[in-house]
Image 1 (tube, rainbow over the protein chains, first blue to last red):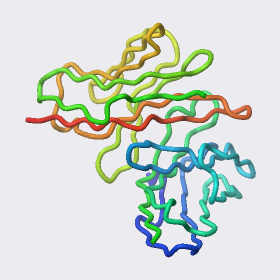
Image 2 (cartoon, rainbow over the protein chains, first blue to last red):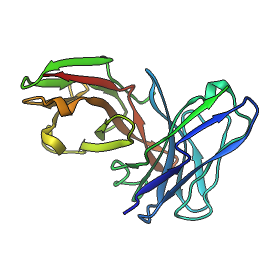
Image 3 (tube, helix red, strand yellow):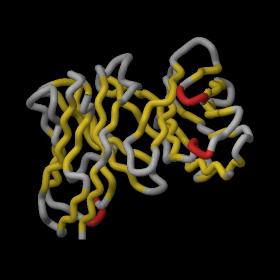
Length: 115
Length: 115
């Protein structure tokens, strides 16, 4: 089973460039989310989705866009990259956003550097 | 604001000794608490959860956690540490958000088990 697949694993951007981090899951999970991991700050929620066509903001949404056109995919878009967005990004999914949300399944991460 | 705190950046333990990784929480209502583990260059993996019932919760890899409502704590424990337990550990709490739920993570504690 593939689980949660993130691409790319590594990316270097210049300030002002845009890009999309891809996330796909094959477990038919309703709930999907994006986190960023920074030293000393743990994981912070960027955006999440409770189903196709439904998204909402997390703790640190500025500078990022998401959409959920299918159950399987939840891409994260950086509109105009800034050095402050240098981080490791994780996509995670769960069966639903109710009682089962606590068992999140994580991808292996994308390490992004913005110069 | 609803949150979790992990007061120790790093915990050092000798192999075979008991270990404790601390977590305190601040939430309204009944807390739903979780522990995740992250091995190097990997995404997070679910360890255990507390929803209700017995204050001592058992999870994967021999870990357990003790819920203490009066001290608002949810410490992770293991009777005998292994070198292979060395990893980054995250405490998390489920919080309501716009009719759904989301997970908020602590900053993480690095556990180093020495031979």
